[in-house]
Image (cartoon, rainbow, N blue to C red; front, side, top):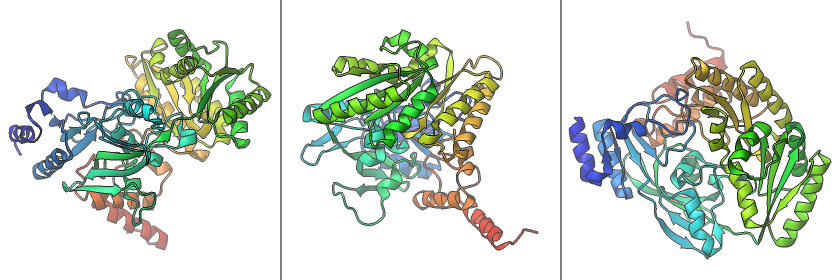
Length: 486
């Protein structure tokens, strides 16, 4: 289909103001929050900004007729290239679908469109006595649709769980243009869990047009503790002791000294500049439980080597401590022009050894690495600081990241805790999954999207899609039977 005809038809669906075609406008949609050079990209043919599910369905049908891929996109804050086009095509930007359609206090649910900003959902439900628990650091900008696509996490997911634990049902547009619902208000839904399959599918199975999400009652009382330690290892042992004692805080975060050096001068949150690491611990619940648990956690921290434990009960003081944590990435500009943020997971018992290995990699590659992460569930976020204007610096960062990922997998960890695979980590999938595993996943993708039009070239290593799946299964079967190709 001629591009002019394509644009004309898109404008007929969403209006002239709902289609971007200028090169300067399209350039923005070639990127997300990932590092330039770490993620491949291609210029889209056009960007459409629909306002209804029916418009999205019409765009999808048009794309099928034109033989073009479709990439759904939220705020573009993702860190793994999930919303970055690999083959051009049409980007469907969901940012204009930003309404909270219903708040049901009795059922504790909200019905929202995919472009609703994460934090704004909690702000709108707070007067009703509820909040939306998943809280990525980008929650001031990221959208619910993007959270669903990546199964996003955040500090409070230690206690409350990641996005999938808070999604009850979804309205989605399928690759053939049909609009369907998965899940619903009832806790028990028979049949296949298609909602579970959609959450974390990175826009490869369908496009979310509405989400029915679970709301969490606002706690009666909240306490934040700040515990400085002489080194990361002591803070790691304190983390393990808290969880081993059967305590599950609302959040349990760690920042090392390099992170503190960036954050404290910028936000004056109250982190001691001489600490080797700090734990930021939030406890919520009934007033009596919060008070008692706070005393118990403080004692465990002191026994593990904390130099002190500060308590913040007032909202302003708690917000300031959290501001330092949430804005840590932005503060890294004080230390280096660029950073590469990673997202891997290790068992909590492996935290001390893993952080020692990260320190070794930092020395081996002459690369400062700041650590700010969800210590409670072992979700690491090493921040590699560099200047991409220096020849070879991006390549060095990517080599260092490979060392970190490989080590984390070797100690029983996972490739990603909340950022997704996208294009950034698809080449590492074979570290964790066998050919049979990947062929099975590709089979699910193909059952939804046999032509591979939704968000192509994401998640899977080269050679695991479409007609290649059958060949891979046959190859795996031959290997099991001891049959070798001639």
